[in-house]
Length: 325
Image (cartoon, rainbow, N blue to C red; front, side, top):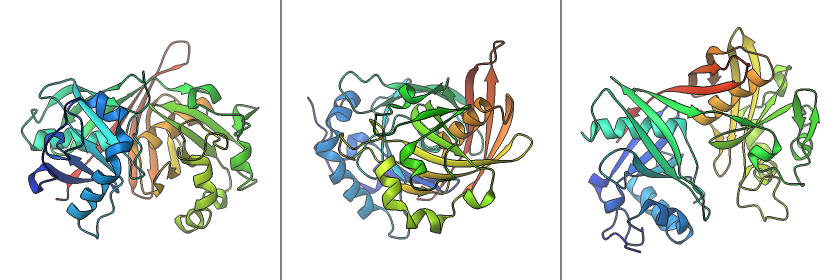
């Protein structure tokens, strides 16, 4: 297993903001001596180097900037590009809409790809035998990217629910006992995997859509549901789960709040917006086509494609990013 040499340099890191999500993009050839040169090896050994990398990132980044994650890559010079998406708790994400939007912009800005190009990114994540998740990105000037999020999967098995979650079917949705225990109004959830696992809870009363202050008050309870670092015998979901609360506010329009595993309250999230759109379709609250999801960090535009049989075939997220550093 070959390791890279050197420490984080100024030129090795760029910072981007995508609708309130802030990610660093770090070149793996100049990150840490302990980081393996191969993306798959790096994913398998994430526990040995993630803390050191996050500390180095925080030193590199202004104290006024709060990172939502680090994109490490590319590990190679041409598509399909091999990358890792490191969460701020040291775990690896399978996919990030905003993160991959940022990665696409970073490739363009560094001259590694053309301003108008389509390429595949292979995201490596933890677990022996785990296959990298492929995502197609289409970049478009001046700062947009279309991220193909793939075909969603629904239900407890799709998100790795354990007996602790006690997800029981109720109409079109699920009742997740751990979540309903936090708020009795949160009993209409859709369990959906769009690369990452998600639990989207629909509410009809605007007061049941939590504010940032309310989420922060119940953060410890929510982390017990969402975070992947919960002891396995107590974990409601095998690898944690991202939580969203949503309500329909108009034709093809949904409002949402996000609590990400390992991160907590999040101003916006591309995969979460995709999950909300897919869940709303599953609940027959929206139809296929163009959908907007409004989050505190901004409005995400998505496109859903359905088969003739009515199943979702593809969800495409439109992201925008601007360079901060």
